[in-house]
Image 1 (tube, helix red, strand yellow):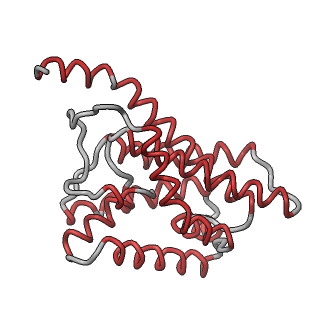
Image 2: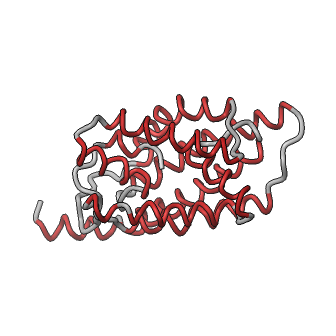
Length: 224
């Protein structure tokens, strides 16, 4: 197939990819809000965001945005290059989370709390698959992880574990919620994201003109 045909095909997929990107980011924020309302534990980074929100009086979504922007600045010395998805991740997820928190009430009773937790984890996996499969670049926190992996030579697993233990511990001290939801999220988000990456993969997508952090293994960007 000619280069012109490939380019036209890639351009034709752009609306789908943009829909996946922004739909996934909005769904990510909403799924995180479900975990907040369940009260059974949050994703590692959101433990930190909630703790900072408790201490500062800012909304959790705004804290998420500010922390995301700060993490993105750390990409500079790591020589990471952000893409549209990276910047959109910073701007969209926090706003979507605050909007969802404004309309989703706290869960009362164990059944309702477990239902919100389960829905939040599954939808988070779907959201991750959506926006990563769009291939517009990773979130700022994933770029930090892969950048440290490349600069230090440490394994992705070790770098990710060290970062997430640090943010969970710091967030817990600040008042963030750690619980069974945190554990279940940690063990299930990888397999869920892999499933949804296959479901939402854009067939025959080429590299196109999108900019992503260079040299990233797929397994490194399964979570925001």
